[in-house]
Structure formats: structure tokens, C-alpha cells
Image (cartoon, rainbow, N blue to C red; front, side, top):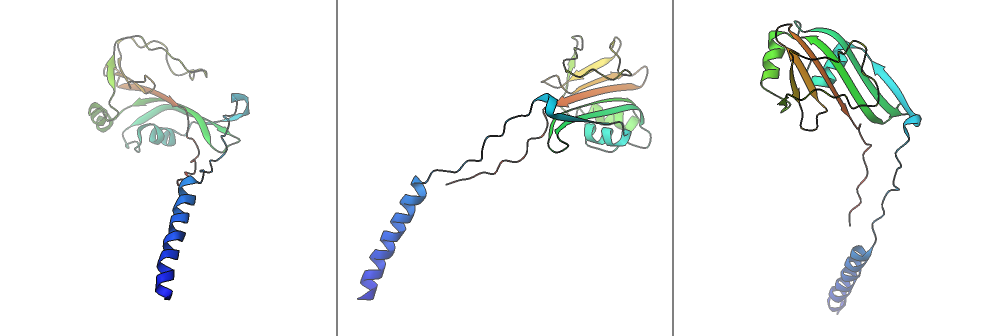
Length: 172
């Protein structure tokens, strides 16, 4: 007699659970508003090895001569990076030149003049004139490599919107 009652009762409870689960609204985290640029803190690094590593996702070789390096990160009170940009001037080693010739960043040659679009000014050491240089750009034209084989000189720059904090996902 107990089995007859337990099986339908379990079925009813399961159906109620499914209905509650399906009809329950998902709780969403509150939308975080982007802070205005006056609330952002600028941190600048000129550590050549660190800037090189963050730029090229690899360590510089012992024969790579980093002439200048600068990385800027704008963050919320030193926490989440909202904007970043970097600049490099390097006399590349043969190994770095060979690696860049494999086009690891899927860059395309560009014949149009280089236009600097960022709000913050370039460093004083980063030139404005690149005649005689080979210019390679990403499709979004943010990552730019500027190379002179005659001078064995590489200028590079990139910028981005930063890294958003992870948002928890709630699913039904």
C-alpha cells in the first residue's frame, strides 16, 4: 500500500520542482557603470622586460636591445584595468626578427600613413615620421609594428579597452 502512494507522490513533487525551476526568474548581478576617465588611476611602467613581455607575450632574447619601453594602464583605484597602451623601440635580434616574420599576430602590410588615434600623447621618443619603414597593422589598426631593416630598428605600439572583471553567470 505504501508503494502505491510513494510513487505518485514522488512524481507530483518532481513535477512541482520542475515547474518552480523553469518559471523562476534568474537573478542578475547589478549592472556596473563604467567609471569616467577622471576616476581612473594611471600607472606607467618603463621596465623594458615587463613591457616587452606584455607586448609580445614572450621574453626578450639576450640579443634584443630594448631602447625604450612604456606601458600605461588606467584602472579603477588600482584594481581593474579599464584601458592600456604600450610603446616599444627595439633593435631586434635575428631571432626576434625571424619570429616576427612568421607573422604571429596576423598583421597586414599598410601603405597608408600612420595615424595615432589615442587620447593620451605618444612618448617623446616615439617618432612621428616613418618614411622608409615597413608598417604592419592589425585589422583594427591598434597593434602596429614599424620596422626598418636598414637601421635594424623596430617601433611597436598597441592599445586596448582593458580587462573587465568576471561577471558571475546564473543559469536556470
